Image (tube, rainbow, N blue to C red; front, side, top):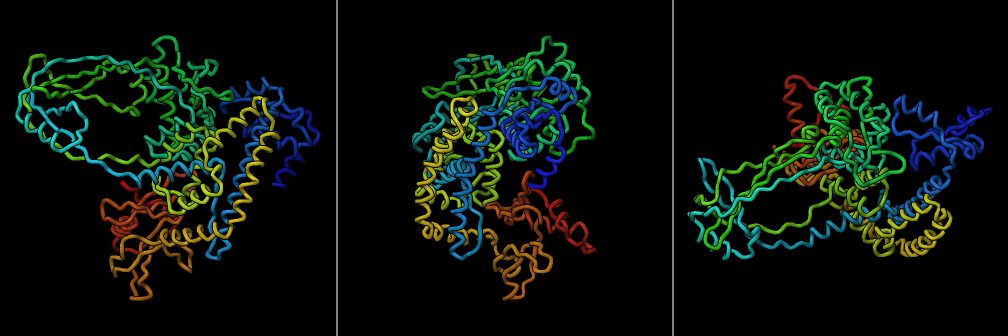
Length: 622
């Protein structure tokens, strides 16, 4: 870092004008301000600000002609205060947790928490507790069908859930083979407006739903598209597209892609271009949109998918609402009532532009009229049980963080990634580990404030006050220090007790993290992750090597943090593994299936497995 400061300082001598052209957000303002202050001999006091939302030549030239001379001190102070709070809480608490466990002499493990990470982990642990304490309650549903014009249709009974088996049996006995009377046919037209433009969190949510991308991966892909001038600045919370971005010009640029050309042509003939803007605003940047620039080369993989999603969403926001007709047929037998529901899309509207990212829930209905008397073909009761709440996935956890106002649009994805790297959570449906339970337990006893979402949300509001000029950085930091001092003293007094509890869980989790559930198929002893003393490569080996001479092995990916998942392969039943690298999509695979496939591919020749080949060719789970 010192070398960079010296290099920039040497270039910045005898300069008449300085311009801060970092990204126009809190982080960019802090970075530019700090460089100008310390590497450019205090030039932050007179530097001009360049504001832009795309990296296109047109906007960069325009931004250079419209330089802003207003000081950004309140924005910079808010950004610095956020960094300092993260340092005060995160580094001090994380260091204390890590060192307390290390002093027990049972190995090193990085433990961390912070004003955002603490409550985020608390959400996952709390949900895990809800699931473990959940008591299923039995219930019964009625499954029935009718036959009409040679086709079978499913009926809905008027009660979704029946509390007792005896009641369900009575319904089935009295309605078996019964002739139903069609009492009414209800029809309703529903208009669904086009979707809002993407802000970062809605883009991350859609990319997870359609591509399985983690929030961090989506942000990394979006930043690459932004740097290539293909989309606007992605770290935005706005759902609005201002007219000055040039709707028509962007659409004409998009039309250079053959697959978008007919859609753009249709939009351009529909009249005025008016996007369906959402309620959320961002003072720095508009919603995410394609710039209309042509890529310098072909887009591949994740970047191509994300660009397509953003482009189609952009077009869809300008389109007309869709129109759906919903039908409901009410059928009676004595005091029992059944329904047939269905729907069909009458007018596509925006759906035509947003395909294939729209779920079509249309259901056909039989041509039944009032007075018709179809007969029940089959009816039975089905026992079910109430279900516990779903575990969080990266997308739903990010939404929870946003709803609770903890973290920022730029940091939430990295916090979720950190929970995986620390070993606090595993699996796509985020299951809290024993270590997460213990860290959360320790903090809830000695430092409950760090787990309280309202405390973190209040700090976010205070930093917004700094930005608005209604509070000061010093005042917020003094208040935070008052809270932190008592917390650190309380933890320091119990350091040995805390470290003992944490180290026990760390050791147990470390062993469990390298030991497979299923026994060795060759000798029946334990399988574990082993690292070669010669090459340093990791692989699956048998503990029976030193007892029985068992030589069973399986290859593993060499890149990323390895996690043994609780799920098993649908093909061979072997335990699945996951390799997770920062900024990349997690690789989920079955080591045994991979080894079989690799062996069958070249049965007559011995192939040397390299880390890159294993990471590239390990098959994904289906």
